[in-house]
Length: 344
Image (cartoon, rainbow, N blue to C red; front, top):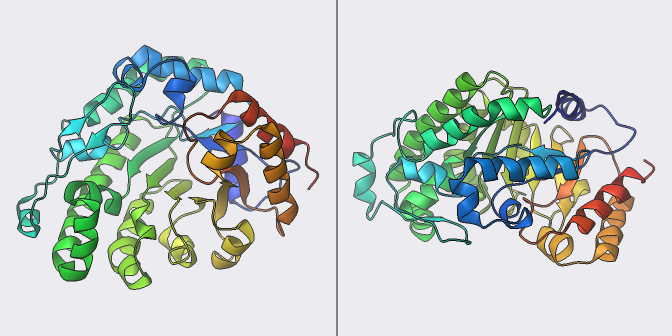
């Protein structure tokens, strides 16, 4: 992200109304590798190919704010690998982390990883260190410390079904697990921030908070996310494209000031739920419109969304979730053009 884009994003978060709504996308391994002409394993294992794919996105769409920007990742395996999870890496499919907790009793013996050495974490940081001179030569900077959220990581370590059952049947043990993961995430986010002083944002991704009711969210989600977003940055970005009606009224108090939601909730409703204290990042259907639709579909849905907005403050136009596989250049460009030409 360039200095100008970063300042624009911060102004939007502060509530300043722009002349033209900004466009942004979350981009990572589901879209970037195949779009850039490589398979997913090559993208993960070759630093030059990874860098070239990210630079190509910036060159092709310079007006777009890509978040987090130069995402150094290994899909869902990044954080679970540090806990000792077996990770499966097919050639051109998304990687998968296998669970390591086979019983609730295993939680008490689980040790918090050392973020400087364990799993894939050193490779994540070293890739960014090696790429940093070329990133900055392109006019961009490393802006975000990035991680999956506490409940998301817990679901990989336990298995999603097993974790959801344990929330009800063994809440104290699950809270012990979430405490350990939160300490790990504090260490991991802090290490990223110390390694790259240009970081002034935290980006957490956690869909599991949309699977629970309000009591469970307030016990197992809210206090731990708040600790992480309290680490002291300007932009506090949360992705949850599952149900968000339970968590949305609490986002501002949790520290979130930028939120990427699922496409099945309307901006106007979210603005009411958040009291317009949180900048919203969305919200056309990613798969069925942006990826599978034609340019006419994208323009029609985007214009309908814009026409329906009651308040244009604290909005970044995107899709409801990350950029999905298969999105073509022409669909991205018509989305950009429709937003840019819309009179607000």
